[in-house]
Length: 455
Image 1 (cartoon, helix red, strand yellow):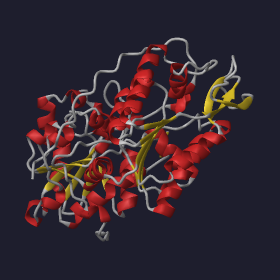
Image 2 (tube, rainbow, N blue to C red; image 1 turned 180 degrees about the horizontal axis):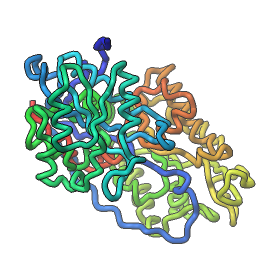
Image 3 (tube, rainbow, N blue to C red; image 1 turned 120 degrees about the vertical axis):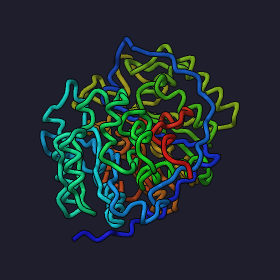
Image 4 (tube, rainbow, N blue to C red; image 1 turned 90 degrees about the vertical axis):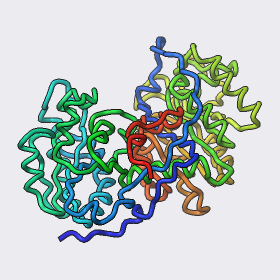
């Protein structure tokens, strides 16, 4: 028997009224990002649009007992977990979906989970089956989670129809159908057919107008958020739009081209912006410095100059590393040396911050009450170049633990580095989001959120 636990998330309300929802959780592929290249497929960043407001949206807590008891609920979760064959290597996303499912179970609902996994090309592929996810979810819930053989059709309808209150079913991968990502109306209607209402608890896919995130809301009412979606938006919005100051952002990553909108938005909101990762060298070159064979986007040197000028105009502080760990090649066993940022030798490439930079970052962040980190400071996957990233992770963890600062970790590599460092538990919040956060920052409404019922 599974007892419904009173999760703290249950008390989280979605407050979107007059909120410019900002976040910073852009996935950065750091190893590839730092590899030097003479050519880039660079597309000019589009101008930032004005931030939009979202009206308050309903969550499952706004539904009455009568609206849930005995009802067939379709819940969109994000169980797109990393797999090694059939073995889940990180079950964070599955664990994050449990509070909402437990709540629905406790209210006597019949729950059917839908999600995608990977990127199937032409129909069903066994390696992308949700079987391992259903098994793991069952272990976490302490009950069997039935894996349906499909996500639409008569067999699915029968499984759902025969289920009892508190039962949990997992539909097979929605992306086994190309109609899922195309939000094709006939497919949407088939997906929604067996159910009475819809819950979206997948922040990571809320920026996609897919059948299982946006389309089903046209057929299922009410359509409301789950606790995870509410928590992500509430936490990120609360930190950025109403967070305590001084406020700082740490932006790591490879390319100015992919972060220009983020940088401009953060300069408006934050008192300090620390820049790290491969994009550092475009900024150093913009300041007229030699960067050896480090990664540089020549087409964005002028853009970097504009960012530096904007910061000066606004009286904001941009912090670039003062010393760099350079390597003679892009390799875990490369020869290395620590040099000043203005003395990178020819034939060497920067792959991490130096120790002086980490100390300067610690000093700069010492008085900050709110800090968001996105992206690593170096190629942390290589042991020789992980000190800058782990160093700043430790700084943030200590800020929260010792001074009560709000620290938010966003982005795939930022999260991975924080987990590897062993300090994840000391952070205020670790975001599950990716592209969804970037689109919020760019002022775009998330279709998966906009489609939900207003309060």
